[in-house]
Image (cartoon, rainbow over all chains, first blue to last red):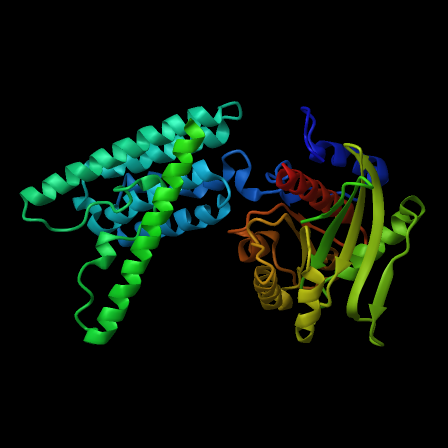
Length: 234
Length: 201
């Protein structure tokens, strides 16, 4: 079943099935599909030529007009959905994690967010779209694009930290950088900071412990992802 | 993951027709069996209750010939749609490679479709399979009933109810008349073969 030449197994299966069931079409027993198979060639609806990210694009475009809770909720939900879709596809997943981290920062600060953060979201999306639609792009090229965005993200985080230090330190920087934004979910400073005042002390303590655990896990994931990238690049 | 016998160069692909009770899963298999019996040269196994409902499952195996040197054997299963048979549904899903979700287009069955799809998601997750990742085709069955004046969900509504997030290939169909039964089957087999190839890489 290994694919050693240009023909796909799916293509060959399609031909076999045409031979076996061809008569059905001839007898008019086919009606147009309601939604035709983007996923036909891959078996994975997520990897079908850029279509899965269509909603994400629409959300990002609407951010040009207004950044409010509703749109940011939609953005984060769509990023989470796509993370599930690209679970086994490392590079798109890392782009999505990067977007998740930047998105979380923008969600907190909305119009007050660093302008470069919103620009970065669009730029990362643009890269994601490029790598998903570019069939002939090598893995090395994709990694190069990813690493360049990670670098940009780290610079943004540093700029936000500087701005925060200058203004007395209000609000968190995007949390996905540090040991490597590429491999880290949007958990971190903004959730580990002070617990809600309404909580009883023991609940707040338990919650803080859980959040610290999450943070440590996220850091390890980031380190593992970065090590893997590093090894692959060698 | 499909059963691959490297020694005998054979691949067994398991496709399950899932959906609410009386939605037309068995009718899909019966149409394929009756229409192509001469070509597929196999027997369909069905275990039914007295009321002609699927008790355990229906089973229709057939070969599609060699692909890349491997004999590909397709096994079509249905599950019992009735709510009370969830343990059986879960059992039939074990080792599934691809799913056809047969939804009932009748307006009164709207909620049952949604519940059944949710049930599919839950049952798949017990085998660490994700509804967004497994090859899946949706079939909106019983479209022919519109001619009899029976209120049906519009394709737009049913698509929104079931497929707005999944974005799986979908077909309006009439299993009874055979409309889009074969395209549904072809689609799921092609998607599943592609998925298996990807897993084997």
